[in-house]
Image 1 (cartoon, rainbow, N blue to C red):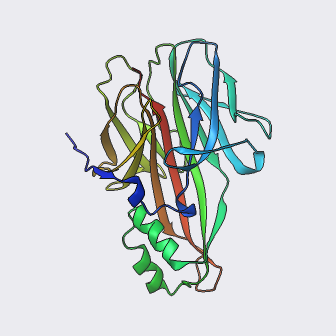
Image 2 (image 1 turned 90 degrees about the vertical axis):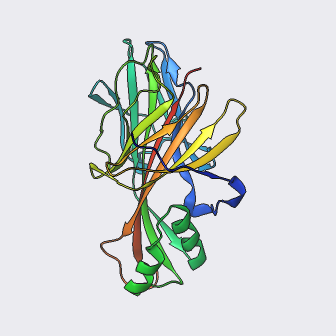
Image 3 (image 1 turned 45 degrees about the vertical axis):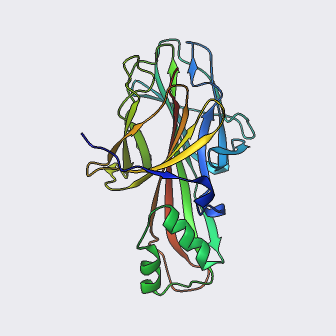
Length: 270
């Protein structure tokens, strides 16, 4: 069995800045009865705490609910908050809600901020690649997008998550709401449908007292990781792809990097 490499991370030691903000879907309740509301906020922030964002068409390229392989497009109105506010299916089941954002641009005016971001997200060769390519270190840009999923249990929550076709995503191999769940969450991390081997997963664990613990894990050669979780806790899994932009150039203010952020949220019943 694959045993993840785990490193406990002290919050005060993390080199987190504006370039490392996570984005996720945060349900008001992860477990609901059939026919009740499924509601969730878009959140952007750090350490599993952040601001609530409203839904806007221009910022979204996909927003779907998936139940048993059936995909239903969600159509909130611009300005809706919570961004997700729909009726749950009547039947028991595991519901996956996925959202992909449009691309945005970030400008780096400080080379050291990029170095901190690359180190925090475990891209050890990024600085050397940047320098070798001859890209500007004074002012350059990154193109980024977010690809998020949350798992709801309707009734018993029986069922399984599956690949949704997002650019990058977590797929839950185990169901945290299953009565036989053994508190080991197994996930696959994909990019363009292919497994990401030896990729970092940052795990944010929020306890019932709101204290957040952060740990780092890595996927195995098959792009999977098994991560211990605790009953009564809420989780955010975060995985980032950093790659050179196809249109990169040595000009100042050029887009030279692209990042794709995958996020998964779920809770573990008591």
